[in-house]
Length: 422
Image (cartoon, rainbow, N blue to C red):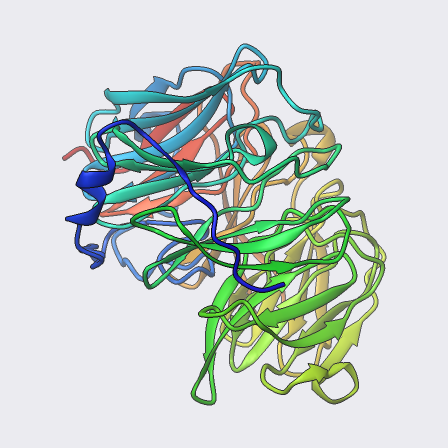
């Protein structure tokens, strides 16, 4: 499917503002500007982040209007979140002050009859992406893809169509140069789309297989070529981020593209959303490269709809959502190093949030807000289990964000800032 020119819905008086914006990012080293952080793999390189915390470590806790499961995005002194009000009848982008939690602004981008979704998903699960001037948010079939200034002005909004998916949307937008790219997997007529981030104009649109999916693309650079890699229901695929042309495909196991793929040590590690083998792929090539580029695959007999994996040194860790069982794989060979239970899910709830890492440790958030901190190696070592004083109705399915010495933990209704007081 080639480029199709369509006119975006621009907010009144905002087009003139768009054209004078620079396309540079102006991000700081301590920013957490997108899903899974600055390196798109869940890792932070900050050395001053806390490892242990309790309710006494909470610098501030604020209620966020409505409900949402998007993870915090942080640029400078601003935190961006999405939320849904009145059971999905209204969608908003919210900006909070990073130092105090005070709401700076809230912009309503859509109202109407909500589309279907799953009880574990909701209507505001896609994490924003931001550069130094704009923030982008995705609300699926209802609000589409929106672009706002850092002061909350709606710059443009693009209706992306019906996006038929009985369990709603959750894939996050990504920025690649002057493009904002969005995965729109759907049961009918799914696609991957790129818009100009300043104007909202369509740059390219590529058809995807008809299947539910919630994964976020990952940009890698391999042997002189940029590849945008996306996990899907039946295959792992790579695209040219500039044109949308499909580069290669690797057929997967048992479907449902929900976990985001990770790239480490020259290999891509993919986890299926159902009970299929986990596997590693060497990037590059052209066409169907399943037989030549799948380096290893390992049986996985655990629950489905898992969080995304996290890689530390030569190991990748995969958490079982419904059992709290963590499995460590050798990234080069696929050998299972160990498999251990981290917590009783009957006590802490499921593990839905994708993990993050700093200081060589992995942080896994359970639905009740307990964060299990694991040190990988030849055996599993649980360093600590951190807890905050959460309300009985709070559910934690968002990933942690780390910025400038603080950790940010979101529940469906509140945001916590953990760490030293500035």
